[in-house]
Amino acid sequence: MDTRSRASSDWGTPTDDEPVAIRTTGLTKRYGKDVLAVDDLDLTVYEGEIFGFLGPNGAGKSTTIDVIMDYVRPSAGSATVLGFDAQTETREIHERVGILPDGYGLYERLTGRKHLEYAIALKRSDDAVDDLLDRVGLDAAAADRVVGGYSKGMMQRLALAIALVGDPQLLILDEPSSGLDPNGVRLVREIARDHANRGKTVFFSSHILSQVEAVCDRVAILNRGRLVAIDSIDGLRDALGTGSTITLTVDAVPDSLTLVEIAGVSDVVVDGRIIRVSVDDAPAKVDVIDRIRDDGASILDVTIEESSLEDLFSAYTGDVPPRGNDAEADR
Ligand SMILES: Nc1ncnc2c1ncn2[C@@H]1O[C@H](COP(=O)(O)OP(=O)(O)OP(=O)(O)O)[C@@H](O)[C@H]1O
Figure 1: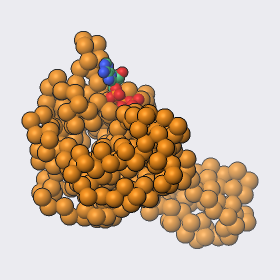
Figure 2: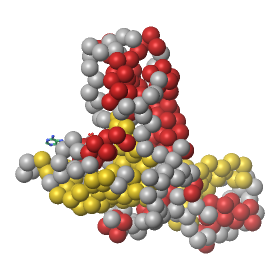
Figure 3: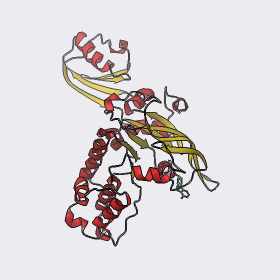
Figure 4: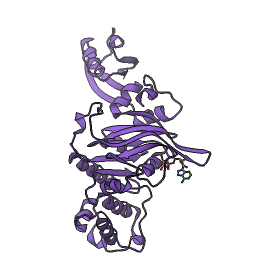
């Protein structure tokens, strides 16, 4: 299988010629009559991507992963992983995928080292336990203790090491940062980047936007089992029209302030010597600064505040309808 590496900056819109890591088609999962956990999900993740799978609690992220790994069977639709069918070619998939599940099943009475030895044997890999421990920042003394005495962060690091066994072609991380301190969170990011830099794929599921933004090439947003958006974070921002606010302190506000004439400027508010400019379009930021100078003011200070990811997230998943982006058109 072709495992080309793509730097994040290379990604435009992937085409169907790209090798596919995960594809779901009309994937639907019901639990009983009342719970529609995943609803007609069409999703394609390409090899070499770090793909963010975002959604609030209960959106259906873990259920999607469970179907991909054949831990649960779909009610309708299908999924392929690295070209293999999720239901009939499970063994081929499990050989090539490393997964950090949400709520990992570790055995309290086994040492961390034993866990890794079992995982290495299962994957028929020749990885060295100490190298894996090193990668996730667990020291050898800790590895020789039973997992029952581990902190949550240590368990998460061990689960991450297990996921890395055999250098899997696809690494699935379900809420990988839960229980981790800031150093652990940074480690997860580094591992994800390192994996993708070597041509492998990372599927990063999380409800924490900042972590997805920091590392992912593209993201899908899932809400109540449905795909509501799929794009780069910048693309999502552009589609929503949620832009930036530029706050400028000037020596004196010019009498004829012509900022509103600039394309991409949506609002201008003057408060004493402070001018606040709302901008929908990134290039307009530079135009604003140039124009204020042309209008005769000296700029003493500038701050630029991007729309927060929380705004973005709630626009897609809350009551605020997304502007200028027909989510269905992305599907
Ligand atoms: N085994 C199950 N039986 C019944 N309902 C389930 C089961 N597993 C999940 N659900 C329900 O399916 C929906 C989707 O849950 P899922 O765990 O996939 O969401 P999630 O996006 O992973 O959420 P979280 O971020 O909280 O893990 C929820 O309403 C959940 O209660």
